[in-house]
Length: 354
Image 1 (tube, rainbow, N blue to C red):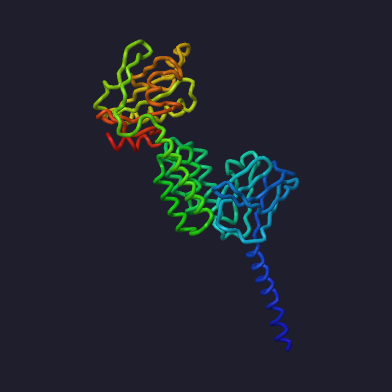
Image 2 (cartoon, helix red, strand yellow; image 1 turned 30 degrees about the vertical axis):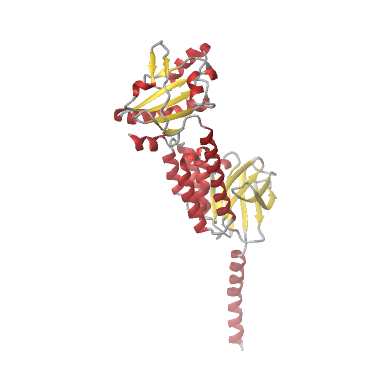
């Protein structure tokens, strides 16, 4: 009897450990300590591609910036939004997490500078975002490298929207590939459906934009003959036999100036293979000096810089249907348009025709 009692007593701690471990495994908690966030409200939402959100809970940080949000249901694979005061971050969970613990500083939390425990997927995502912010993407090809580093199909799809969504039209093949992978990974989910619907809307917008274009692929590029800053006339037709990027821009156009380094990079890389740039400025007569200065500042070393200095009344801009800049047209060696607005995918389009 005494032996049996001793055996039962030995079992009690074991059962207690099992209960404790099982209880921990069944907890679904998102907690953290965020320096500088004392007394700020924290909310956690399940987010979707259609921008709808489902509230999962809220808490208030204590004096040390500590908070804890418990979920009654297990975490599901999805996109989440954490708001701390006025700051917010989006991230991915794979649905296998129990207790997720983060630590960071309020000033850098929106750059995903945090330490994470309890979620390999969140660790993966924070690492990618931190590198993106540190390295500053220069080309779509670099963006695609980071997208492929995503640890789940949902993460890759989300990164695709964030890194390529600003100019989605040239990358529809990439969007569709991610959609197929997401549908295979999360069949019938709202994420897969929303992502597919988003692609449909992007394609519809692309088709409408193409229908409104004055100049389309396959057309002969209309002639442009205008003076450069010194008064010398340059004609677009004189470049027949080369692949030409016709670039409408202006010194006052911020997005144009931001796009110039990539054009310079492509020019230096492919000029020896027959690539030229023909730049048409929409500057005004009174800003001619700024036009000249912008050419020097941005290192636009090609010789074909022309303008009638008539701002939005520019004659070639009207012929080409330019209603916003930067606007570019890639012209093949035969003088016909081969691509309209090839900016993010300029190199890809160049390699097709060089």
